[in-house]
Amino acid sequence: MITVMHIVGARPNFMKAAPVLRAMREKGGFSQTLLHTGQHYDRNMSQVFFEELGLPQPDINLEVGSDSHAVQTAKIMQRFEPVAKELSPDWVLVYGDVNSTLACALVCSKLLIRVGHVEAGLRSYDRSMPEEINRLLVDQISDVLFTPSRDAGENLLGEGVSGARIQFVGNVMIDTLKHLKQRAEQRWEGLCRRLGLGRYILVTLHRPTNVDHPDRLKALLRALNEVAADIEVLLPIHPRTQSRIDEYGLSPLLSAVRLLEPVGYLDFLALQSHASLVVTDSGGMQEETTFLGVPCLTVRPGTERPVTLEQGTNRLFNAHPHLLSGEIKHRLSEPRIERRPPELWDGRSAIRIAEILAEA
Image 1 (cartoon, helix red, strand yellow):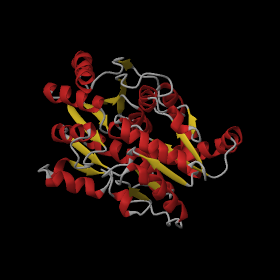
Image 2 (tube, helix red, strand yellow):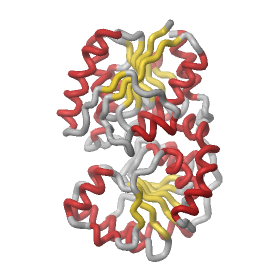
Image 3 (cartoon, one colour):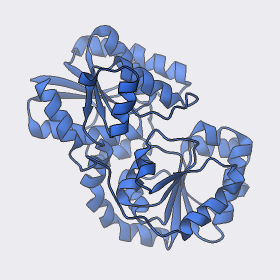
Image 4 (tube, helix red, strand yellow):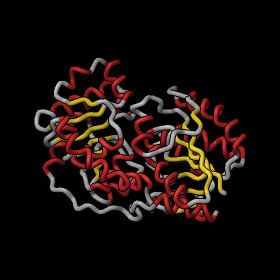
């Protein structure tokens, strides 16, 4: 029996871990433990995702909560180390690029517990992003690197990582999307009726580079409000973004924008699927819109997911934020590009991971 501990801490982790847990359960031969660091701890950011994704309740919750990057990472390491020592699993799987991923990988590397990094090799080449630092470090200390795209493997080879450690398995986020797409679609009619939706764009903003600078956030919100005069703008509000809007007194700039509380995965997937355009600074939404064939405008200077640009559905916006409204209107006027899912984005990535670990 192969013992595996899965580390989750934030919403993107839940979507990536769910299909791997399921694949290992169905394959058999694995004893699994789910550890939640508590990095995202309120119901809208955490518990509702466990329920909708069919994740079991965590076996262990470290309950670290929110804090600065340094303090949060240190808390996770302090609380995780005795658990890792006691259970000493054959494998610890970490997902994505959040602080929980780095903290637990560091602990395991010093305890000589093998680490598998799911979604390895992504690079934005922007070291001002905390996630980029996490990705670089985790990939150096992990024993096996499960990559979602060909470019990710090329990045790792370019950094001197042995090809023997790299396993191209595809994108586990797409496993979750495909698994739940029908259930999300079943919610669309009720969601549409409840929100009174016609044609709309869906917006998410939460990255510090966009929301932690008053002038930039003000210009972005003004641009969205301008667009809302012509088409409905839905903005599920991230707690971080709401906090900054309140702190800077910017609520009046959103008079025409429709604010929503953070929504669960199924409703959000339905909203993405039917949007005329998605405007975001999220990484996962670039991937999901690429698979769905929905136009996406990413408000960032670069992306660690260049495959989404190559497929044509995603474009970067790196101009002055007051130009965002014009770029949104331009994208809305363009014909949709034919949907072309990238290689191995087929819903079987988690099965490949289970098969590789079963033979490791």
